[in-house]
Length: 110
Image (tube, rainbow, N blue to C red; front, side, top):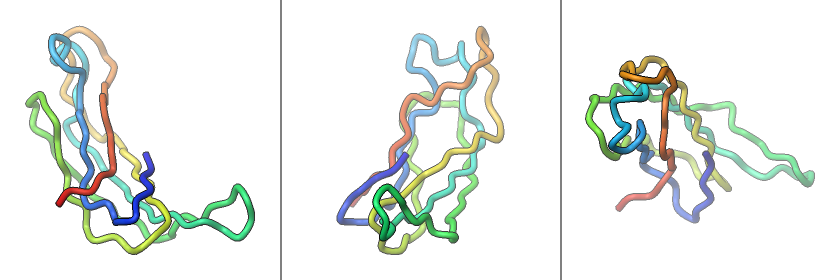
């Protein structure tokens, strides 16, 4: 997920799971690593520069339905940002063995 704002994102907002009535039927996010990269345009068309520096977070989630807000560390100025979600562990679903992430957004909160 990437974001392009005049301001720097300071939060990741996600909905880890499928909304009711299927909340417990699917796997839900229990622990994840979130990697955030600064991205800038390169001098050649269709090229970008992704920073070598990464801002990693490991987040543990409670098995409670609803939106989750994860604060980001201060990020450097960039043209845009890239967020990567790496699933490390899940709460097992009662019916299906797939993991649902309904939303994943890099955002700016005041």
